[in-house]
Image (tube, one colour):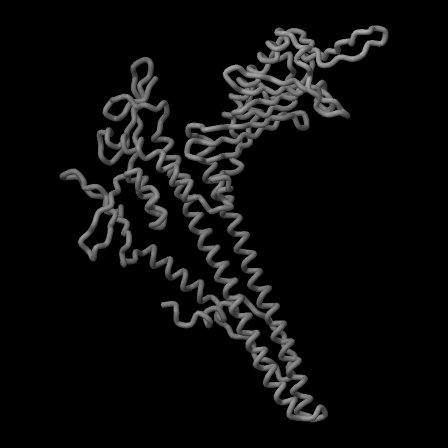
Length: 486
C-alpha cells in the first residue's frame, strides 16, 4: 500500500496528509480566533487598570484641593466660630465620602477585571480543547519522548511527553485501559516465563565463615513503575501491589551496548546498589530480556493518547505565554513544502489530490477543496490569517494599482471558469474597512460608551451613600478619554 500524488507519481509519506491538513485548519482557526478574543480581553483589563489609576489621581487631587479650601476657612476664624465648626465637619464628611467612593470604585473595577480573567481562563481551556482535537489524532516526527507509568489504586496510570521536530512539546495522559499489557497489574513472570531467582546481597552466616548469598524471587513480583526517556529506563518491581516497601529497581542506560544498574530497595536504608559480582551472565541476560519486553509494551502505550494536558514552546506553557500564533506558524512552515507539492501535482486547480494504491492494485482517491480552507482561514483577523500564506492555498500577494495597497487575491481562473464571488479578497495595508471591521469598530465604541450616568448628588444632610455601577465607571472612563475616540 502506498500513497501517490494526483499525477500518479509516488508520494514520499505514508499517511493521508490531506486529512491532516483539514483537521489542522479545523483546529487552528478556532484556536486563533479564541486567542484573538483573549488578546482583546487582556487589553480591556489594562484599560480598566489605567482608568482606575487615573481616577485615583484625580480624586486625590480633588481631596487635596478641598482640604486646602477648608483649611483656609478654619485658619481665618476661631475654633468656636460657627462657620469654622461647619467647615471642619464638612471637611470630615467630604473626605470620608471621597475615601468611600474610591473604595467602591476600586471594588467595582476589580470585580469587572475578575470576571474578565475568568472569561480568559475559560477561553484558554477552549483553545486546549481545539488543539486536542488535532493532537490526539495526528502527530509529527518525534525529536524526543519520555513516559511514566505506575500502579495506583490497583491500576496503571500513564503520562507521556513528546517533543516533535517543530519544537512543540506535548504532554498527554495515556489510556492504559486500552493497552493489552497495562490494562491490569502485571507480574515479572508474564514477560519472562519460568522461575527466576536473583542474588541481591550477602550476609554473614550463622555457623559458616563465608558469607551467605541471599536471593529474591522475581517471577512473583509486580511491575510497579516504569520511567522511560531517550537516555534510559528505570523499572521498579515489588512483591506486593499494596506494599510500597522493598523490591528492586532496575536502571538501564540506552546505548549501542546498554548498561544496567540493579538496586535493592530497603525500607530503612533506601536504595542499595547490588554488587555486579553477584550476577552471572544468565542473570544479566534475563534482566535485559525483561527490559526489552517492557520497552515493546511501552512503545504501544505511547500511541494510546487519552487527553492533551499541556503544550509548551521554548519551555513555556502555550496558554501562559500566549504563543498560539507561533504554534500554528511552526506547523504551517512544516506542512507548506508538502502541501505546495501536492497542489502542483493535483489535476484540478481548485482542489488538492492524493491517491492510495492498495496491494491488490485498486486505488482510492482523496480530494480537498481549497475554497473551503480559504473560506475558513478568511474568517480570522488579517494578521492571523496571514500565518497560513506559506501553504499557498490559492492565495497570492500582489501589488494593486489602487493607492499602492497590497492586496491578497485568488489565483487567476482558467479561461471560461466561473469565479466564485463569495470568496472575498483580503486587503493588507489598505485604508478600506470591510463589514467585519465596521462591526468590530462599532462593538468597541459601544463597549467604551456603556457607562453613562453621573454620581448621585449628595443630600442636604451630607450623609452620602456611594453606589457606583459599571455605568458610572464607564462614564468616568469616557470623560477621561475626551475626544480621542472618533
